[in-house]
Length: 71
Image (cartoon, rainbow, N blue to C red; front, side):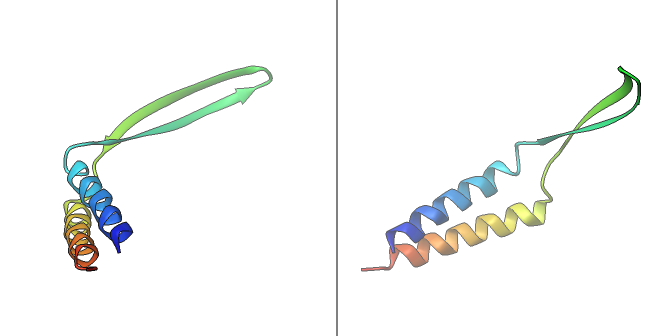
């Protein structure tokens, strides 16, 4: 049951981090002609939706409580 507690702690920390950390995403578009390549690379950052982070936090707390009661 201790492994459930530690897994819940990891999920909780990831859920809290999702409120502050953005995930980078790169898009490439271009044309290749022979050996030459002409293109544009666009980088954007997106955060997870607030509801997803909330579910992770609540789920992590639930896992920690379930894993802590193993005795």
